[in-house]
Image (tube, rainbow, N blue to C red; front, side):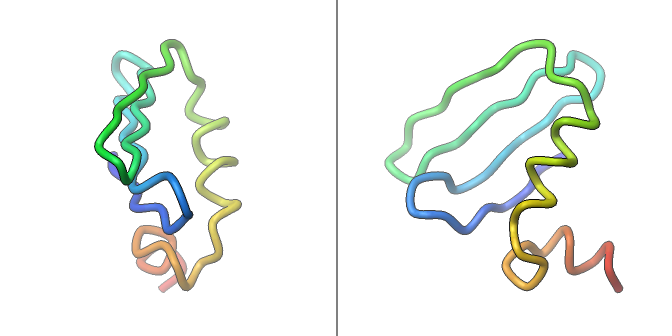
Length: 62
């Protein structure tokens, strides 16, 4: 699942629920990976993004 993020440094979060790998794509092109991330934690991270700034959350809310 990909979650666009509107922050000063992070452009997108990409989460693979099968491998439980969270990739963080930064606006400057860097990529960092965090292994073994629980799905509930990803939802908490995404929920902190205001609904109007996340197309995923906006679609979910509608």
